[in-house]
Amino acid sequence: MVEANLDNFTIVILGKWNVAIFNPRWLSEHVFDKPEINVEFPVQPSAPFRITGDGVRIIPHSDRLILGATSDSDSNLEQMEGVACKLLSVLPHTPVSKIGINFGYESDREPERLLGLLSTLESNQLAGSGLKITGRVFGWSFECEDRILNLKCELNDHVAIDFNFHSDIKDSQEAKARIEGKVIQLKNKSRTFIREVFELELEEQ
Image (cartoon, rainbow, N blue to C red):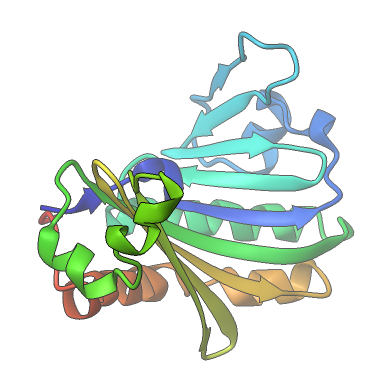
């Protein structure tokens, strides 16, 4: 059974972000619909802090803004999408260059059928090198309508399949257009890939 890896259910917006603006007061006034906001500070000073509100995590960096979902439900993903669009609306002059809408799936078991389907390098081809294969990583890039799908499948003691729907954009208005109304559609595409291409069973939502 393959289940969602929520660490990789994200929207990432590359740009030049003013990290200082992302404080609970400003977010409650301009972004979140509810006043309950949780702030998590890292143990390591160099690591980013996380803010959670309305079921959406915000992790600000100077060069990127990461928004994360707290569940893989359509309603939560719509909340994440809405927060991303609201931030782009209230910060229209922030220079942005790329966006990624991401979904990750994993399983504790490695299906032998999937390994046989994807593997193009057998261990006996490297026998003379003295190396032992302990894992494989496969990657592809596809044109997917108005964006690029970067797809990665990692096989070792578990299966991890990550989807990155990538767009180059020129400003916040274009970024919003590439996000608004698209997150659920792209999640459904990722689930179709899991079922039809990798022939894996997904955990029911």
